[in-house]
Image 1 (cartoon, rainbow, N blue to C red):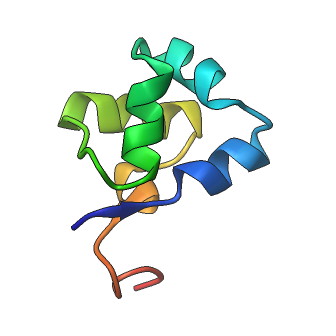
Image 2 (cartoon, rainbow, N blue to C red; image 1 turned 120 degrees about the vertical axis):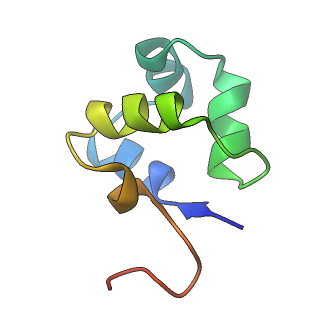
Length: 69
């Protein structure tokens, strides 16, 4: 299962789930589901999220044990 660092990045950027959701045109519930690894986003949505945080998709989304490789 793919994990992510969205919650950490949101804290760094001082964004709520609702604010991030608005920036990437999804619901707050979608962001919550992604953060809790209950939903894997499309490539398009993953790219939009990475763009908000000014980073790459693979810095936000990763497989367990592969962080920092």
